[in-house]
Image (cartoon, rainbow, N blue to C red; front, side, top):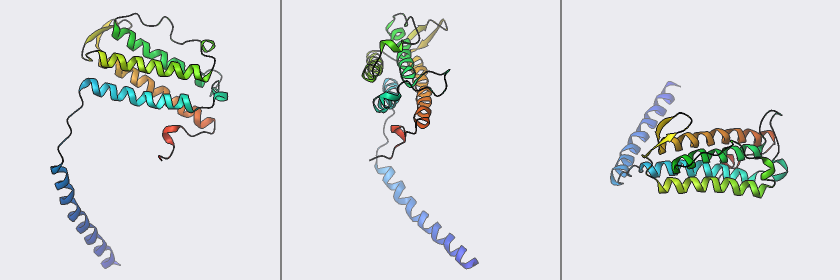
Length: 187
């Protein structure tokens, strides 16, 4: 028994030792990718969470759009409207405009799944436009904190906010007996 264990350890060590130089050589021959610019990094993070929320908005069954995990919570559609509208607290401030008057649009304004999907797509597209048009290191005044912030920091705050709502919506999927698009096997 001891000989088998020692033999396996020696064999594993030999395999790992032989494989490491080949990997190191391949890494040395491939140039290191440069870091993304600050604007590109913000844009990639923005687009990643946008992709996830848009996929959910398009995928979730319309007859379940008013599903609530509990009566006190927002419905699936209300969550999408809330998080998308919150993006305007970023885009408007970055543009030097006033933030939206209300935090949440009324569900009655967006009666169908198509209406909600269109709003989600537009809110994220408007964010992309701002990120592409602005120097993300530019300072703006956050009217709520009454403090200067970089556009990139403001964007990341709303990227995080969107990610938090993405997590909530995953629960809505699971409670509805569905698998979120991001959790499905890749084709």
